[in-house]
Length: 429
Image (cartoon, rainbow, N blue to C red; front, side):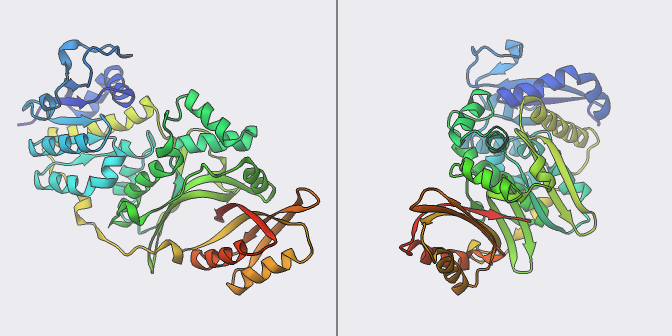
């Protein structure tokens, strides 16, 4: 018998949960029409029942017990927006085992335990919808699972953290130092009081884990991903990059080659004429290259209550349609297998290097010899005099393996004429 009312329960009602609830209220009639059934919020679990909320909520809907949501036999869909990992993981497992569909925006959880939870969903003949876990309101999960499913995905590359992109934009456009741009991002709500998850690259790495798993039909472990943040990027490097024709962005890159998967997150010099170079402030964008479709790009706001709430509501609608029409959901991720991953030392890149050397004859020759001995060729080089005794040198290499470049750098650090290595960044074309 088809249901005419689909009941949902929320776990959490913070910024993201509040955005989803607001959309359900303001667009409820349209949402119900598209689903073919009424969507009713039955219960909302929160930590503090007395907390003042921006969105007015009937007190009768609130509970401080997660169990009241995940075990309620009338609730069909559980929406997890509580954050964290362990409590959310336990709650989702309970919800699935109690025969409910799950919608989540929890990237940390899905990156670390998504495979286990999806296995539970398959066993229970349910599913987990997690569009909101990556890219906020930008549709990424659904296109990879459905629209581009006939393609063999070759590469994904993009800006998937709004905090770091805001910081780097302010540095490049306004000439602010990193610390100033970070403080401004915190003041505007783009960065947390403890920004380490964003600026150290882990937020982007969790998202890359999810996207790469879907793109390459593989099980991705977090330690398969090389992660480097933006805290060491200096304004000086951004200005030199501009002089060389590049912008600096924190990129998440996934690629499948004959040797295996290449997965990395790091600050990167990218040509100024590349579309990703024009993605500014809190906006996100990701390129996907398929063998049939070619290159496609997804762009939009990667965070925020309403953009992320939009993705959550779309997932609620998909789950509701499955219930309404008694659709047997296919957990495609259950067919994924572990794949070989190429160690970072074996991956190939170009490198940007900024160093300070004694202002004396023969320094360039010694650098060229050190690089040449490791078969590292140079593409561009700039010398700037800092004072009479020292000179700042900026150079860009041609393609070279990480291992060979690092061996050359070990020798350069030992050279008496080199006073300091100030910056090393990767370059993509």
